[in-house]
Image (cartoon, rainbow, N blue to C red; front, side, top):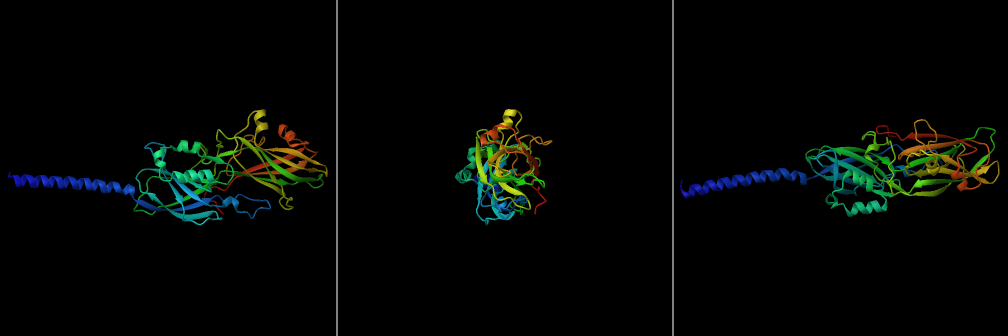
Length: 358
């Protein structure tokens, strides 16, 4: 074989090798393509609001949105990849918001974590790490445990898991959001002929200062119905706080006079824990007398519901059905002693789960 033939043969082999490399390179570029994914974000149906503030759409407001993209580590866990700050949607007061977001195509399973109404510190974190989030190598468990914020706004979260994101298909995802806080309404419904009671002030005591943005993994009964929160997720460094809400004149039809939003609280088991558990203190005038104070506890002695436990995205209703005497002379005495001279029917209900929206 002449030198020319050797050269031609070598050239053909080289070109074939280049062709194979080019094919592999093209196949891999699919992971760098962006795919426009359409999302439908839905909050659970508005919590039944029996108070005078029933025209306030606060519980369904969506003012800002972000998506944290976590990629599979090849097993059961996920690791942070990147963050998408959603800009192209209009702030909404309805329970449904539709928008599109560009996500990287991938053959790897991904989990999308959604945050709406981010507190300032969380929003700053998301914006700061929108492009370098993958470099942090933060796991999903670490993210859930460390992403906390003061319990100030009604932050909402949701999640969705995708087996892959393909550029040739149109992906439409519906994601339900749950609120990070619980809602409390107090009603006054004394039987006819009872001595009068005029509510004057209401306080939430021993409430956790911090909220965990995303609930722990084990708290979700079913990823498709994340309103079914089974246990509270309270940051270990949370401290208790107290705050008061002015009561408004008792609604003659519903009996409502007090509304509050409360962070989650763990079960209280001992007497000491029960006295230190999150509770409500109501001050009012009994039978035209001076203001005295009564303590009201969450889930006290309800069958199947731990004493003092408060769950996010739940609605708690307390109805005062009987008052037989003045309460404690000051708030501290009301806090340190078991409830006296007051009968309260405690009721709670979960918000409407996925598929039963209004």
